[in-house]
Length: 451
Image (cartoon, rainbow, N blue to C red; front, side, top):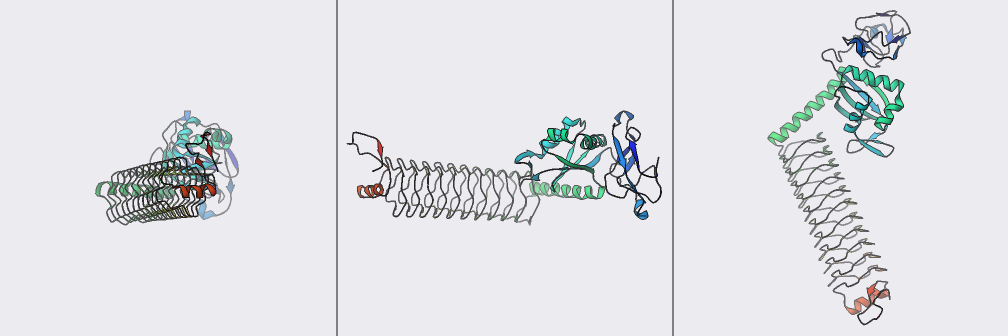
């Protein structure tokens, strides 16, 4: 076969050739290029079965420039094995936890690749990498499937969008050099994970290590340097991270249930949506950490430093937060049902709308805290400092306020029904400031009243 100028080649004529990507200058293995031509794309001779013909036209543009570049031979992308390495570029962006996001809808990358099967893909596709710009997914699969995807992209882009739920911007082959770099990174990551699992990584330097989705169950990471490491959705269940350095680490959606993180440094770490249930975080440094949406049920955070941390939407039911520094922390909407917050510093914290029912807040410092609409029913607030706190519309039904300091607290529409530890003079003062109490037993109305 010879190409001597612009022409359109019917794919039924060239089913023994495979396009090798649009990389500017190319070569036709088994063919010939005339007139110092430059080819936009590559064709490589393949021994495909004739039944695998694709009924689509492929346009090959000839540019008679750059004689030296035109003599370059085609990279051996898939000559050694019956596979093609190609990259699909999708619209949208990658989320922090490695999901595809398009117009507010998040899709798992694995699900996207699985959906390609609905486009007539017959063979297994292997994910080699996922990266930004827009969303690039490196895949390895059968050349026949690559040709089908490319043909559909050219002729039926809306069909691909309908099935995947996200538009495809491009489908191209990868030259071996690019693929080898990604493959090397993948192999290095696998070796590292194996070493950590088998030999442990005590005191090991793992600064900025790529451990996305790594399986590190029960791994020994005592005193390891994991500063700025990428541990998104990694499995660290029951791992030993005592005194580990994890500042600025990415732990989004990570599994850390039962992990030992005592005295670990997690300052500025992103732990959003992580599972930290039953984790030991005694004395841990969590200043300015992002714990939004995290599962901290029954976690031990006693004596931990959480100042400036974001705990919005976190689940802290039955967690131990005794003697913890939570000053200035965002705890709005957090579940703190029956949590142990005795002696905890919550000064200036945002606890608006938080469920603190049945919580132990003995001798807690809540001065200046925002407790608007918080549920403190049945909470033990004996000896607590609530001076200058904002308790408007909060629920303190059956709460124990013995020896609590309520000086200058805002109590308009705060419900103190059946609250204990409030003497008559304090009650009258609170009523004068807008608080709500149950009527006295002798009152025939027996209704709740604001006096």
